[in-house]
Amino acid sequence: MVEAVSHMTYAQRYGIIPFLEWLIEAEPDSLADRVRRCFVGAEGENVESLFPDGMSHERAFVDVLNQWRDSYRVSETTHLTEGTRVSRAHTLRHALEILRDRGVRGVPENFSRKWIRVGTPPTKEFPSLGTADWPELEGYEGYERERRAMELVRSSFISLFLYYEELFNLGQSLLRGDPPMPDQDPQAREALRNGLLVFRDHIRETGSFRLPRRVAEYVLPRDPALWYRAGHFDTAGLWDQLAVMNMAYRGCFGPLAPAMIGALGVLICDTGWNLQPARDLDQDPFVFRSAGGSYVAAPSFIESFKRRAGHHVLAFLGENHQLDEGRLRVALDHWDRTIEAYDPDRQFDGYACLEAAGDGSVLSAADILDRYARMANALRAEFGHFSHDLFGDRFWIFINGNVQPRTYASGTRAIQADVYPKNSVLARPGFNFKAVRKTFLIIRRQETGSIDAVRVAAGHASSSVLMPHYLNTPVVNAELDASIRQFQDAMEAIVVRDLNQEHVALQLDRPAADLARLRRTADTAGITAALGLLDEVSDDAGPAPPALRFEPDDERLGELYLIHRKLREMQAHYPNRARFRLEFLPLLALVKAIGRELFRKHLGPRYWQAARQASLALRSQDIALPSLED
Image (cartoon, rainbow, N blue to C red; front, side, top):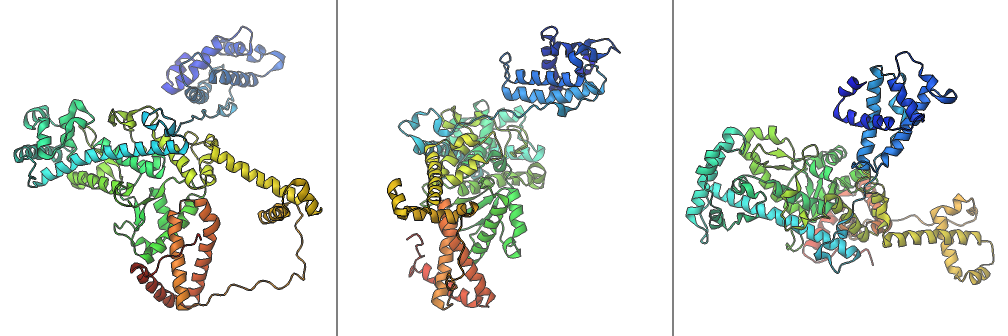
């Protein structure tokens, strides 16, 4: 057996060794001790005789395994986390099958890993950003504290990105040979440019950023003051102070790791995505753009979108310019259909509309991604036709120290936390990307009426990120309590429906009108029908209400266009998503049904003529979009 264990992998050995040690320490004549004696007994000895009351070896083995599993998971004698212990218990099952195949007599001949159920590692709860003990959060409570924490993290990511973008812009200006500005030193710029050209020649010759020591120390200018005189760039903020000059030169050719993390962080702050879809973006993650925002998605969502879209939609995928009204309407329609199929539980993960910046005072995530893409494309250009071998179709790429640049997808190594500035909130305890996502959902829950976002939190696929403990907030509890009370009141109104309503209203201290309203609510919700108490509609109920009529004159066609456009804008940007689906989504369905009927009646050209006239009137500000919330 010792030889069999020695040939196992590291993980398998450290799954079975704790089990064997536990057997050795078992009480004499206990069931575990009898199983241990099966391992050390003589060849040919009857193992069944070791167990009392005719218990089989298989039954005893399973009972002992379960005893060890339960004690090992809660053991306090080891420094290992419970999750690690559960993982090692999983590997024990495979190790026992190896011993079985090698004929070790202590393992039953018909043993199967399915005999023992280890369970799953415990769910780890990740606190939100608002729980961090940061001095900037003093005086803030509840949602405002979460919002303030998110603002601090987002602004830190933006500052991190802008610092390295400034270095990149200076380097590109030097490589192009741009003339110096009045406040820049021409000699410093010329010295740095010569050093960058030497660096570029080495990159194109070797394909890496590793310079020979002779070149790095004696050929390249090493004075940090040159960078400030050449373009007012202070190298003191570079993250690797041990190789600060090398980092400065590398950052002129493309994004360093901090620049990439800065752009990635802004994206996660604005979308609430998990790391996996955020890291796996394709080289061109933008599906389409509009005046209101840019629509970005993970590769799987884009593929699903393409399968549903026709050639008239595929023709403008990936274009940088904003779509006109007709194309945007078609694209949004396919976008909504893809969301319904791709994300029916509304996880909000892997697709987003990045809103355009309003007054320009705050950089939008779309702007940051565009600026990062410019840096990444410059790095690709340095490697020419070899760039596809290095980066493939990945969006996130960066210069990886003094070796070849690499991608940053979910299957690659993570970036270490030391890339964050030491004086930044990103380097403090309490920050991680899981906390960012949790804070994002807490903020969204407040903005959208909470129940919709609660379903997102409770039904998230990854138990290590989001679980139902997100529901324990005052707003959610109050909302759920109100729903329960409404259901109970509706049931009460059904029970007393056949009694004297005036007397019931007096006894319950509730107006009779409220009882009637609650009964209507129960009828609409299907509670009455489920109880079998729905009144049958009599044959003499009267004529049915008249069908909806729509007279397609130019004025009404123009109004139909304006209402449809207003509803589309609300669908993309309305803050209370739950209210939109309840009150305005049925109206959008009605408008689309009328539109389809118009085109079926060959009134499409007349509709488009009225729509163009209404659009021109909007642009000239003669009319405004209708307000549907009045």
